[in-house]
Image 1 (cartoon, rainbow, N blue to C red):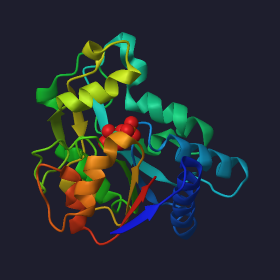
Image 2 (image 1 turned 90 degrees about the vertical axis):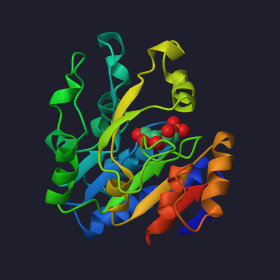
Image 3 (image 1 turned 90 degrees about the horizontal axis):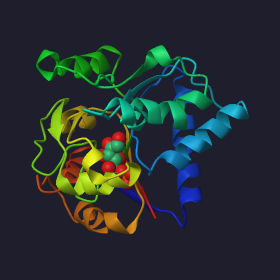
Image 4 (image 1 turned 45 degrees about the horizontal axis):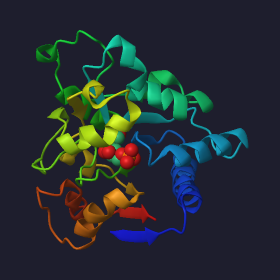
Length: 239
Ligand code: F6R
């Protein structure tokens, strides 16, 4: 695992965007894994700029998002990660939306008992696996929505959001009660199958989780991010 300290968000985003560019230049039909949240937003802006300058094209790219909320009301539909991605990336590039996947599509009345979560992992495998996966880091060390206590062999699954995650994400909603309690997330095993992983760490609140990651040599369930110690192609970009 390589730790790359950047002096500011601009430098971090430019560096991460260059890795995307390299991946897509080498393989125009690359399979990308994508995160939402505040950490990757400026990287996505860089990618849109690269597209506008004709330095990159997503025309043959396929994407798999890490996670999606479950239980968003009609009123809060715009907080779904599908909306986030359309707003912050997909709407500004030439990707074919048919090639953009989420573990679940928004449905206010979803019947979770009818969902086969394993389909997502199977689809990723069928497409050839993720060439590059970008992750953010939760204050509690989560990656995707693999909260503390998640198993290293977990696949895409329904997850109960930790209270600290609900509190952290309340900033996007009118109040904390509107933050969904559940999400469907790639599991840790799903994440570790990506060929290359970039973890973006921005913000004081991530300090403890970053410290745990830097000082671990094996997986500790209490800090899900430490699963990344078990992968041999991980780059941690932090400020
Ligand atoms: C989002 C996701 C989460 C976030 C993490 C950090 O798709 O999987 O793990 O990456 O909660 O969020 P921000 O970047 O908002 O601090």
